[in-house]
Structures are given as C-alpha cells and as structure tokens.
Image (cartoon, rainbow, N blue to C red; front, side, top):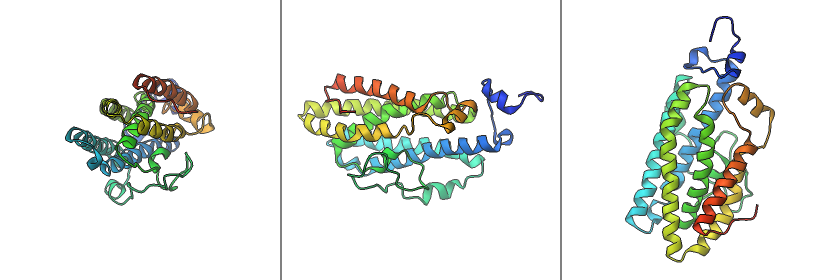
Length: 254
C-alpha cells in the first residue's frame, strides 16, 4: 500500500495485508469472525467424528474417521495460531469450550446453539450412526469445498496461505465420504443413506446463512469475501445434487 492510497481503496483494488500491525479495526473484527467460524467449525466437526470412530464397520472406516478428527483439529490449530497473533488466548479458546455439545436431533435447521459459539449451524446437530455420519461428511464436505474457495483469495495473506494447506485435506475428507457411501450402498444400506440425506440436506443448506446482507457487501469491499451466500449456496446445490445422483441417492426435496 502506498503512503497516499487510502486502505479502503487499496483493499477494493485487490490489495493484500500481511500482518496484524497494518490491519484497520473494522477489518480486524470481520477477519476474526471469519477465522473464529472456521476454527469453531473444525473443532466441533472433529468432536462429532470422534464420537463415531468406533461406529465404523471396519478398521479402514475407523482409520478414516480418526484421520478426519486429527486433520480437522490440526486445520483449526493452523488458523487459531493466526488468531493468536491478533491477541486471542489460544490455549483457553481451544481447551475451555464444549465442542461436542449438540442440540436435540429434531431441532429446526439453522437453529444456533450458543451466541458465543461461532460454528456453522449444521454442526449443532448430533450424528446418530455410521451411515448418518458419512452422509453428513459428504454434504458438509462439499459445502466446505465451496466455502474455502472464498478464503483462498482472502485479502489477509496469511489466512489465504493457511487455507491453501487446509483445502486439499478437506477435499480428501469428502473423497473418503464418497468411498464410504459406495460401500454402504453396496451392502444394502441405501434406505438408511436416503434417510440421512433427507435429514442433513436442509441443515447443510442453512449453514450458508442469509443470501444477501450489508455485512456481505462490506466483506466484499474489504477483500474478505467475493460471492454472496446465495451464490455459494447455489454452487453447493449444484455439486451436491450431482454427487448424490452419481451415487444413486434420492435427492431431498428443497
């Protein structure tokens, strides 16, 4: 950024910031919200899968679930370290929060569990069994893939670099879900898979939030986002619909 260019103009023109020292207060607040949502979602997701590791029908499946737990926890740590550079108490943040807490299974989609918990709303719901966990992993994994594309071009360069390391891992988690569903369907579990898809589809959809908002426009101006929530949801619907069709899973009603 030059000495004569306003930082707002700099960001609007695609500028990048590289350390906390030159980050404006509004930008800092929005960036911290984004990073907290990522960290909370990864830790809550890891906690959910930790509870179903032993539900895996075989050693390979249990290894896959354990890998997801390990890598999601490490993904959270990468971004939490960036939050620490802004003054966050990272030890207390990671170790004094009920990451495994969930709402009752029949709670309406999109219901927040706590105002102090930034996890995506879909991660407020419990996993019931192996088929349920694998279906959720597929639909949410595809949503994560869509959402992470926003952060790969974040105007805060260290965050974008962290997401570049995280994204291939998350993609592999989605691939593990596809493999798991193929095996479940081959074993005659299609009805259970269809039921799980009907349950998780609206909850994953709600995780994208409001379609268009003033905050979203502000994030775009700061280079922290580039698409609206509505556009991201549409993109997810397309890829998720195609994935379910290829697997032979009934597409849930919108």
